[in-house]
Image (cartoon, rainbow, N blue to C red; front, side):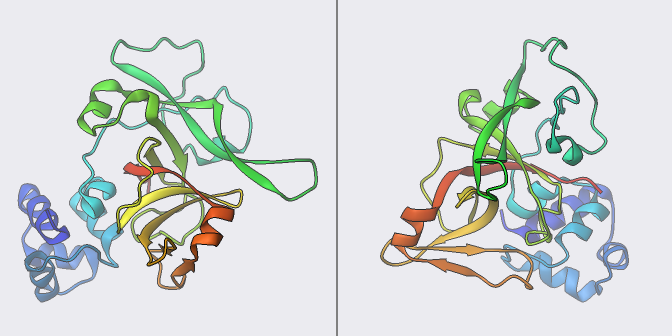
Length: 237
């Protein structure tokens, strides 16, 4: 389903007219009408549309099914806590329901004190928990599921700073236009990825201030590791 069809579905479900939605997001009725009619896969107004329509931005942007919100373990130490947002607090002593599973978080760690070099690892300190049934609906096995936090505004059109993404670590074969979590020379990044002839990759941001990045097959082999495909996202306003 294209973006326009998801916008129309959410608008009609909310009982809003095109004129009402247009006023909420600073667009014209004609622009909303055109968006709903075409097979567009993106919009600069995606965050505003999701907020006005009261839908998950990951679903509106990518058609990703909305699943259970993660819950952060606030007993963990470290910078990962600053990304948590207004979530329910729990700790390692809190029991899991039968349908819940704990997922690790990817994070950047410094290789040695003061070196400035980092490495992306799975962090089992702070935890997020998901419903197993939600992972099944997304087609992701619990042992292959992990989470990461998006830092910066390069993906702000769909993933604002501090968004949470779910990553399927078993799905590392690049499919053009999908979102992937990457270990880029020790930096944790989430980008739309396209293949280039000869085995290279193009990394695309959703903020026009950030130009596309192209890497040869040798550069990819040296510095870029595909952690997995993004299957879920959540943003907090």
